[in-house]
Amino acid sequence: MGKMSVMHGFAVTVAPVLFKAACPDCRSRFELSANALRLAIGASRRTTFYSFTCPECGSSVRKPAGERIVELLTGGGVRTLRLHTTV
Image (cartoon, rainbow, N blue to C red):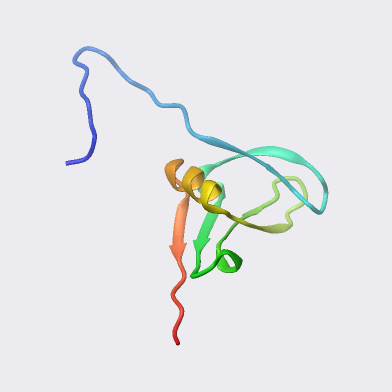
């Protein structure tokens, strides 16, 4: 089973993870929850990215995701799509 600890008599609440982001179109800065982001992991750095919709202007934003970004987003519960390539 996964890592789980039980504390009898205590209610443990976990604050949702928020990620800082910015829109390249309207230049707004904001925080997004994990469910507002999508992560796509491809075969190379060029095909690995995260995306979201700007809450201010509605633009679709797509940004490259290096190893550290991938770790942070997956660890924070962002839904991940693994892209498969056919040769």
